[in-house]
Length: 419
Image (cartoon, rainbow, N blue to C red; front, top):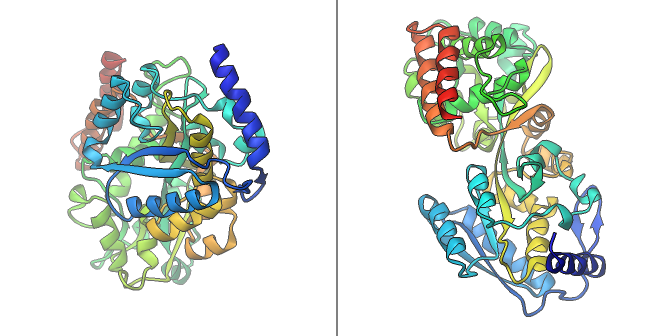
């Protein structure tokens, strides 16, 4: 660490001690009077509501509390990465804070665009966050962001149908298939899930892999997908598809959700950010009848960390204020507002333990359970090609055109060429 950085760090620590403290369990910042008066921060994020408007509301609140003015530069999502990289590479100093997808982390960290945050958070502060969520913002073990827009994949089930049939909430993959099979017939189907080649099917596979004790890469970073555990996972995904409604290979999240909301299925592989649809009486004919659990492999939960993150530009002139803002945004008080406005979840343990939030978002307990054994959503540069191979193979297994072992052997070969 340079002498200049150490100097900045000393200022940060002193500033934190002087202007704020954390009420642990809630993560509630309490500020001295206007500690960042006169400072302006420029934030880069994607455009579009409700997310953009919600960020602007919170930015105004932060200014009221701290005196720091926040300018939001919102651009269309498809242009966000390109503009962020252009501005950072040009050295314009245009941005202080960047809203980043984990897919972009390696590129931005390697280019030196992001401020390392480990020394800006105390160990107590780090302990406020669900560990797997914070880990998703690390590159080579170092922290470069605060997680936001948290989501994972969980299992939704019709509480009324399972109770009437005398069936328990699934605690294993075998249980999922048993329930799905039971409710398939007479124009009804067991389970809805997105199986279109849009990334969701690969995310489902990635969610299940850690449960079986597998992952794409081994501890040394070498491809390791041609294993019995991965083969078993591929077979399970294809088996679920047998109990899905017709046309499932054209289902994305919307189509799977519609099948569930219209009462056509007993189970749904659901993304948490969309799970509130199921119990919304304005959208769902089955509102109030859905419960949620994590996917489990013989009782062991499994999940996938899907998130964006707030990062600080390495060339910001105001690191103390920038770090303070992204920490403040992640606190449960602010995340409660975002949950109401956008349907997303927070990153602190206290968010998932808040009884008021659990009442309005009953899938939170399932999410926290999933995060106890979760891997970050793959973000390697090679992932796009891997995803294409994987999703096509999963569809072919379901159609009977490929065996699970053959599919994993093929994916292994593709990965060995890419890595």
